[in-house]
Length: 163
Image (tube, rainbow, N blue to C red; front, side):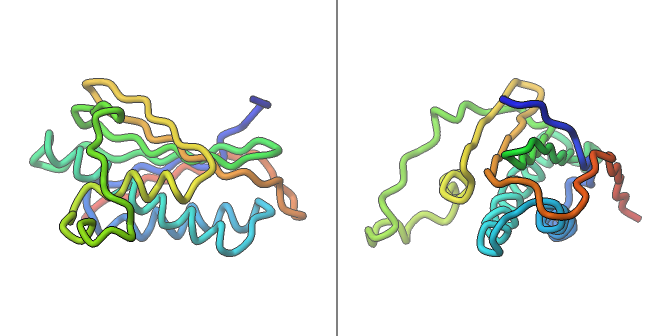
């Protein structure tokens, strides 16, 4: 992999109302700094939303006070844009995910949960999980070169707090 640099770092409370904030910030960064079609930005927004929702649920399962934040980082390289969503949950084994029927199978309608990871997998170019008993990192990659603007490597750090 070529050299990459971090361009965004967010820490949000493990609460669902912050998913929209992450989605908009990550999509705005990708749209302004990468040469990606609008539908690829939409794919990224949906994938990030699903990953953040899973991370929030994982944090809430181990922290009833919802004090452990969810971390979102964006990394850039000349040919790729990566987003990492990290939680402090108990971790999971991605190879143990239940298999769902194809979307064209009427049986699929009986599944109300567990569709997020297959959806993310279909929306991004690469998906990787780093999972331990103290948390999971979901790495999502979309390929596409830098935009025509000045793609600086300044890190944007934001902590969104709840009041």
